[in-house]
Image (cartoon, rainbow, N blue to C red; front, side, top):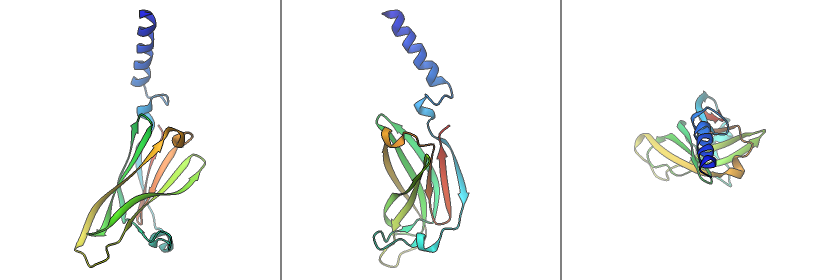
Length: 148
């Protein structure tokens, strides 16, 4: 029994120490940015969701949990007062998941200047099955994290 416990422990530590796809800590990483021009109609929102795309995604991370992961994006808006930030699922295609980073514009005149805003979404292990990359789109750029 002790030998079996030692064997399981050494196997677990071996997988955790290597850069293997079996290691849950290595599932996503290597964030990269791409500058883009977004179609103005897409940036402006729709009648069903009038929120606009944030100006730029400045940071993107995937944090593992016991039941899946938390996708967290940090972005900037062109003025103070943006609210109701959300990562909205836009597309799932061949292992690539795309979210739009949207926020509601202020309803009154606000102080100009960049505002940092954060949004996140939880993804279950089932939703992550078969996912090779996650992209978050803003008005001026997009950031992507991929499985290692």
